[in-house]
Image (cartoon, rainbow, N blue to C red; front, side, top):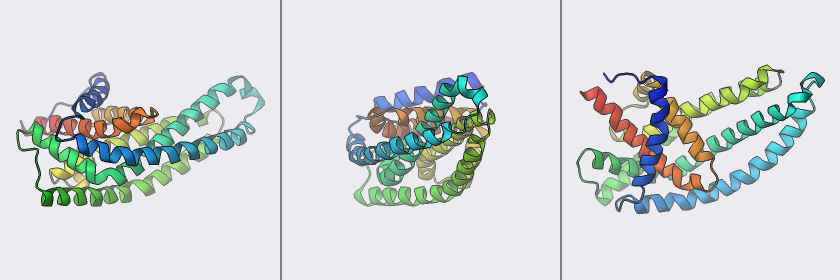
Length: 254
């Protein structure tokens, strides 16, 4: 078994993996797989930004009307916290849609990075590429069946908490933790699927490496929150997740 990372080690791991993924993006075997979903992500992001700006403006106006007089002095902090939560929701939704639509390409990216890391051939036959792409799409649907009902529960909890003075400061924390866990699960699912690990086994695996998983998930969340740059960082996160997967599996196999 691999040694569990402490919180400090794990905190460093996530950003380093995203950087490593970014450097790998323009490898000849990955280049076209990066450019194709880039166009899809651009369209998804433009729509989400327009919707989220309108939603945040109206919601904050109504929320500020419920703030008691004794909290008026820190109303700016409340506004900031809920702006952060809106950013988390937008980034989370962007990841969700972009990964569903880009799943065929991201599955192929993970497959090729696994081959590179393990010394195999990164070239796949056309039939194999089609199989991997289709399997990645089906696996994303399985992920959505896990994610959507739980996200609805977290959203309802966050909404209830947001109307309770003082306690409502926890709302962005709840949303952020769930988003980080979900994104770690989503991005490590691509290489796990290639290695034929079941979705249930993957959840157990990430739970056993929770600090490293959350660090990577928070890094993915931050990467997807940076306008324009996030369009390139999503495929970089797929590569980073695959590199993390290889590290973890090597530790288990020793």
